[in-house]
Image (cartoon, rainbow, N blue to C red):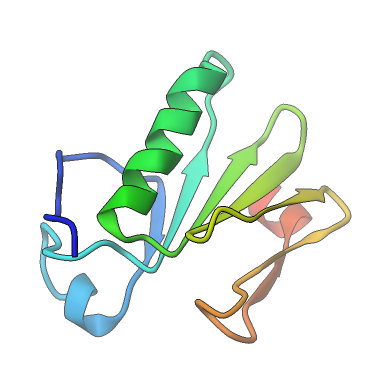
Length: 107
């Protein structure tokens, strides 16, 4: 398992099991990270951020773009998915049964 945290990185939202969430600075990567893009965020920085979380052991990263009203789901195995305002974000195998409408995240 990679050393966690590789750096101290602020996060917009995180979902973690109790073993991770019980500490102020986690010793393990969270199960799900939600990154909310700012209007001036560069695509390269976003790719680096997703890669950092995945290298640390995060299983699922949702990148939400409030301007375009879209989201991308990045899985640890390299697969990606997209969702538009009418669609939903899915927890997949990481958080079975979790399904959140993107419009709810954006409101």
